[in-house]
Image (tube, rainbow, N blue to C red; front, side, top):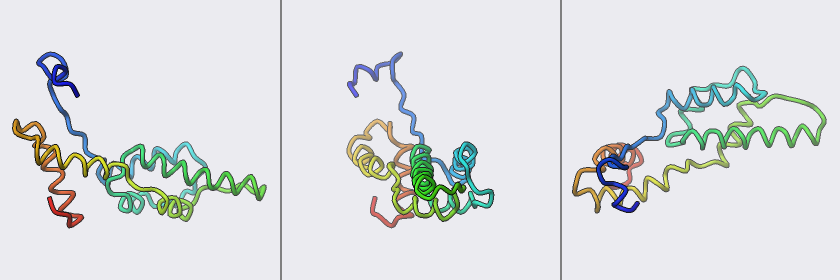
Length: 137
């Protein structure tokens, strides 16, 4: 971003919004499944546990992938059915969190461009994330 935008009175603050935590991911799944024909026994907590670093958009994409696969099956078989935990598991194998690539890039900003402390909050988050992944930071 052009530094002129960062002058006081413009966009002079940087706010880091981390990917949703496990509880929030479960809620995003709950809300997303509310509008889809889904089985009632889907374990939202298990889904949330299996999707670390997924953004809300990533979760929506995962739900869309599962819904599209079920819709395609329904169109071919002529038999309607709800989205199941198995469908979501298959979709999860096809979906990766989009945040990881951005977080890898953000490491460089923290390491080489944080003289003013502007990225301290991001640094703290990255240290936690990469410690869990056992990747050096």
